[in-house]
Image (cartoon, rainbow, N blue to C red; front, top):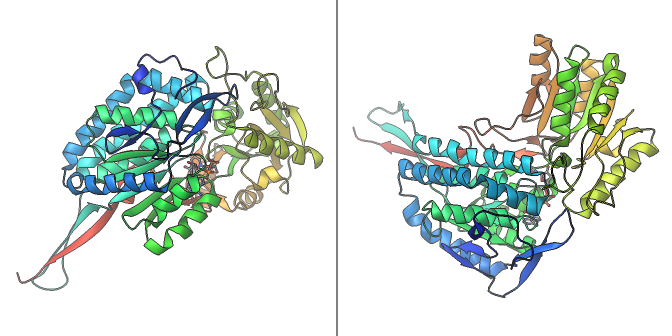
Length: 491
Ligand code: NAD
């Protein structure tokens, strides 16, 4: 059921059922859950509250479909993905409207996300025919040895709400390229975008049972344990918090699944004295405030060297004053709401903690109740210290904490103190420092003189408590493959 309709050109993209075995169905129990617009706080519709038995039906459908899908050629799968990509491009405006409707991000950002998301289908349509094996010179005389890349099998995919389209296509693209079938648990906060993607996949000719989408809000944990404990599901790919990642890893132990985990971040963003100040400010703004600070690669700790610290604080704060917070469909709005009030409470507590320990608020620092309960001001705090909560935990919100530092060695040490290691950034014009610091940062990704690093052609992923596995790039497909070695003897 849908309570408030986004202004779509193609209304048939708005689904309020799940896509399983090529059909649109509700939960067997008939139960549904409410989806809330983070801007208005109002319910915008309902989706099926699926449970273990529904999830098992989806797994069975994926198991059945695997029999023939794994035998399709890479070229055939490439054509399907390419068609799906084209349908995303053709329906980009509608997909963006859906993202804004349920996630709250401004329409321009949502459009950017659709482009980014569709590019994963384009990229993996090009990878699908190129899943080469090796011919290996044998050490045993008379033997011939070679390898085949095979699909790992049925996959369970779990994604978060912060990129309702891109987090899903980043997993479905390589899974299909490898010849896998899948059950995706879409986020309870943003299930409508996932459903629209499934509808476009259906139109692209993806065979029934290859892509199955289940939804749940209250039954999330039981859906998770069904996917992780099923012996049919051979791979789980999860994007979300480190805590849930640890739980899913434990749950997957008994069935020894292949796993990829894209978990939380707490990115250091370092500005050295020798940086170009203007581009460092622009990079920090883009990295910190995109999606109101709700991205895993967001700058969380902004370290600025003493020589330019005051100037950086001034220029950065001035720019943030120019942001306009509001509803995502409104003209001129640059930043939307947070996803729910738990997120607002966390942001508020990080601000209060920083202020109580000597941090000075230069911009913002408050909730925006006149706009709605999920809105918070874009915030800049200077004189941050390493023992503050913002330094130690991922804020996942619109607070830029500016930390002063003295030397390269000091800042690298501080940057690496986090237990997570997803993205790290720095600005410098010194080429030797660029190599040195890029190698010293304990992160899976480094941005040098840029605040934006996501690219379907580049391997995305973390180290330490940010997880393992890589999405996108030529490495993305291998997460969904197994290598079979064949030895032919008696030559
Ligand atoms: P979350 O871990 O609470 O939820 C992520 C997904 O997991 C959702 O679909 C949720 O419904 C599901 N989930 C929650 N508990 C589950 C359980 N017990 N079993 C199975 N599924 C379960 O994370 P969130 O708060 O929604 O998202 C924000 C987090 O995601 C942040 O930590 C952020 O850094 C991280 N993230 C990481 C990346 C990355 O690529 N590394 C990208 C985006 C977000």
